[in-house]
Amino acid sequence: MQVSVDTTSQIERRITVQVPAAEIDEAVNTRLKDAAKNVRMDGFRRGKVPMTVIRQRYGSEVRNEVVGEVMRERYVRAISENELNPAGLPQIEATVNEAGKDLEFVATLEIYPEITLASIEGAEVERPVVEVSEADVDEMIDTLRKQNAEWEVVERAAEDGDQLTIDFQGFLGDEPFEGGSAEGHDLVIGSGSFIPGFEEQLIGATASDDKELKVTFPEDYQAENLAGQEATFKVKVHAVKGQALPEVDAEFVKKFGVDDGDLDKFRAEVKKNMSREAEQAVDNRVKQQVLSALQKANEVTVPQALVQQETDGLKRQAAQQFGLGEDFDVSQLPNELFEEQARSRVEVGLLLAEVIKVNELEASDDEIRAKVQELAEQYQEPEQVVEHYMGNDQLKTQVKSAILEEKAVDVLLEQASVKDVEMSYQDVLAAAQQQEEVDEEESSEEAGEEERQA
Image (cartoon, rainbow, N blue to C red; front, side, top):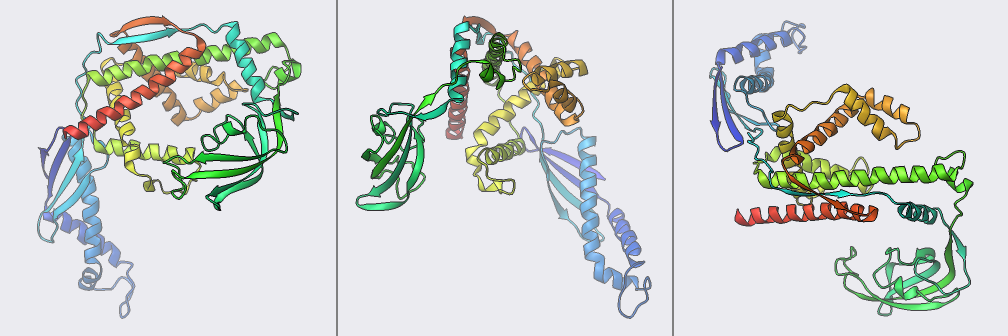
């Protein structure tokens, strides 16, 4: 076997392989002889069909099978001997494939890029310092009360946050439009579930009122015949309901896993959960800043095969999120919606892998179990969760990857300039969310700039 490797770009290689004709012909002949033992054909006894007939009938098919197998096997051997690390599947094409001639094929593949890490020294990272106060706990308990509130009919005008039971019908001019009507619909004012301007006009309404609302559909409304159109809705109000908040008593507390109904235990559990959430928000915010600095300090040529794999994964996530069903063909979703995010994820993954490799980071079984126990605290039966994770190699691998990522971020954090900033519980959660949005926007802008330069 003769092999030559050409470098066609920083991450693309072109492998040309030649296999002696004798090897292919011998493999084809052997397979045809084996097949001949079981061939049934009119006019011949089983196993007595002449090889000339066998070759004429099955020769082309058998040769294609042999050549396919040989190309796959020799490709694997070639990348191993030349120490190539493929990123995705290759494109393999036979360039010479004739009986009596040496087989020649070309494999074009992308490889993982070689990365020389640049330090993020000097990068500024803000690390929030947050303490969950008793007032924060009170606010969270109020939120839990609202989530468990019941609706009761009230004899007053509707206010923001009330629930109205209504009939409605929508008109374009004097004509009702399809899908614009309902009876006995429950609508919470301020929920944002209706067209902008609809809910606000129901503030002040009372039971038995007949209202006529003027609204304009958004320009990007999903129904093209309604997008940007002015419409009138005739609304009949049947009932106005306000929230009846539950008392924070033993019965309320038991709903949240405090079986003995002890209020102090309940407050302590709420505070513990909030502290864990705040800690996660701090870690995520710090991590996002560190990874953003890592990407800015290091330019990586990303294999398109990896980007496509990540794009396909994001498509599947989107399909699940929107309930499109397991049988939905995700190829119907355009790559453009996911490709920028996918490319950024692949960049980060490659860079973190290099940080882990350079610093020889490891995650022991004890560390994996400790991490799983930490995650399991959020569940009612944590021990079962721990055993489930520790008995599943795939889940253990996911946890191991998360631990290694955390260690890599810690290594990078030592290079950065870290400033502690005191923040409230609410602010730290909002800041973490805002940072995610900023990073996504910057990623989008950078991708757009790269396209313009290209």
